[in-house]
Image (cartoon, rainbow, N blue to C red):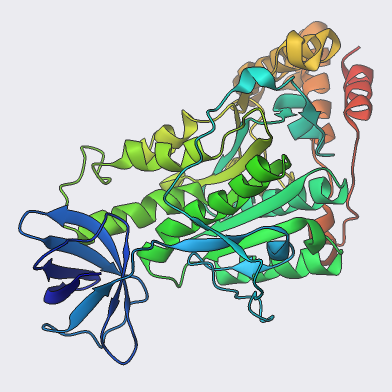
Length: 435
């Protein structure tokens, strides 16, 4: 393998010149310094110039230090030994347990997507019940599709995702993957302890690139987790539940890298490659004839602005959109789902059946009428409405309260016992309200 020399250092960007054979894109290089600093080739330029990223922010590098090619890229361990464990974006164990070892360890390059094409036609629509009334009714989870939980800071995105992980993992259906992208360390610790205390780690694999990590690792952790999930889907034919918290932080990390690399931002203020960045990860979370990946993603909304370009870009990739509202959260309703703006392309008779579909149309009509009557009630009072309008408004109010429920993962903090409902119980309860 050829050797290069460091010619420039600008924050996390290291310029290396190779005299003879240049490295490959996304190849790992090792610096000949005491720390053996790892560099990731991100751009190749004429004249044997390789622009690299300092993966672990090692400040001991200096100009003139030689660099060796490894012929390899970032690889993560895949297979049964990873179940119940927690890893960083480079595949290192971070749960305090022993490092993975053995001659039968399998690894995969995180930058090489599988060759199997996405084919949703091979999957019969199969509804995965979450036990959460508002989700099973308005945004049914269908195997192999993508679901987004959208909301600003502090409205309960991570709590709702933790509840989904708890409920689905407890049902024993499929293998769960969790990718923590740029979120708080506290939240990752709470999730790990919750799953551990409820004996759910045995069906979960976790990857974290948290808020204290550099943007390189935060941007890579999603690909690392997706790579590990793809192995179980392709080689073992398993159905995967892939939880990503938070997809906006993934874009944010990519945007930080773009700034470091002196790229000209797009019109919306994000990196010029925002479309390909989002598509690269989303396309990896796909299904094929061997198995499925059902993705549940949280999306942070900056300043509660749902029209933000990054939020819109991610939303285009989703089949279901669960919108969380600060106003509803302030009313004490949990989960704080905005029932009007929450939408699903999967809420059709072919998937959920005629009964569920007809009920959804009736419920949405009542909720829309409630919104239109609010302004009138604020001026003249509810008693001035016609009997029919009063009856519909009362039904809508009951529905809003009906969709609130206690969560298992919040039992210790809220002193409210967790609840779980089948889809049949949810539909029956709605029928009792609106008939």
